[in-house]
Image (cartoon, rainbow, N blue to C red; front, top):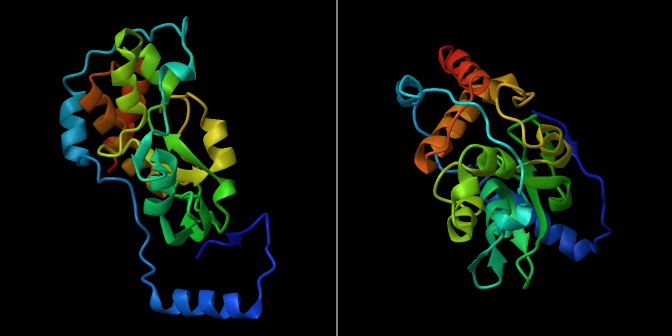
Length: 214
């Protein structure tokens, strides 16, 4: 089991602590996850049809062109929805902010107990999408992409791991936890295939190499 990290330790009254303990004992402990990606075989088949192209420019790119964290239901936006989905025993306040819970970061194997230690990663980064064809999309389509809860495009992970990834593709960055790389490659291909985004040569080669070992 990975170590549990917490950067902020709150002070709780004994009654609250007892209630929390009871909840932990009675609640299910299964870790939720993003929507299942396509199979490795399906990903390999798709890659066989992909003709690599040179990556486009970031000229004109801005995160604001991909409006994200849209309202999903009530006061809950996309980020808060993913935090709830990907965590265990997540408690949210009236504003839908996660005030307690546990999250396992698939990218690095760390477990966190404070939502502030997590980022919601766009598996295919927004800038990568821009360079791969999204620069020609409408703002509405870019918003759908940035808030896509149907494909495996959003996942709660350790914040500094996500920041280290930046806007890099699999030819330049992969999750430190090698056991997750096959799933990550399937997620990446699934998203790029659905949204019709191009791939460069290094990106495709890296994905083929990973998926051939799955």
